[in-house]
Length: 278
Image 1: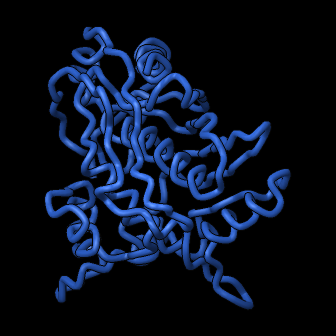
Image 2 (image 1 turned 135 degrees about the vertical axis):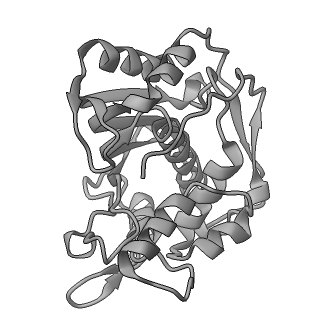
């Protein structure tokens, strides 16, 4: 995870002060990129604890296509990643029934994009295209639907907005564009989540996992996270763990379940606490 730690240092050294939607304020840089080769190990942060169960359950929830926070809690009851955004959404929209729906968030756009003539399961169609036309330059899933990102439409407009697969020499790589990047709290989860998605798609397409390439637009450290970032940077990283995915003959992206996944030889420093800006 040297790439990620180097980005934190770069933002501390070169970032500019900016006001933001949350009112907390940030130090921000625009336009960074990092590459994570899966042959080097699974890119789980080791200078603090990765909330593995929350990350894993969130990814499976996205893949399911659900818009409902209650479905996330069914996968892992202690997942709190979306609690703040859900409560903010209820307040913004004046909802009182507490049904759990958060609008057309990531998974809905991945699996049920609204088109003019038909709805599109982008993720499944992309996986099919990887199998049938691996040289295609259209292996794309887009979560940013401009017609469905208003405050009343969705709990949180997609931060990781767009991703594309690439096949070469039997290896599958994935590039993700992220418009807004909370470097301390969010980005370690994003790196792990998309790296795991890469492994899942590689498994069902019978390819080797290649690289996860992370393109960061507004990469920022919240002002109330500065001490936590400096504490994290003072720690010596451990070697990267490996990912194990139980082979149950999974053929589709929907065949994976929570218990299929394990991190092997994961060593990390203790958690570093910081408050999420909503």
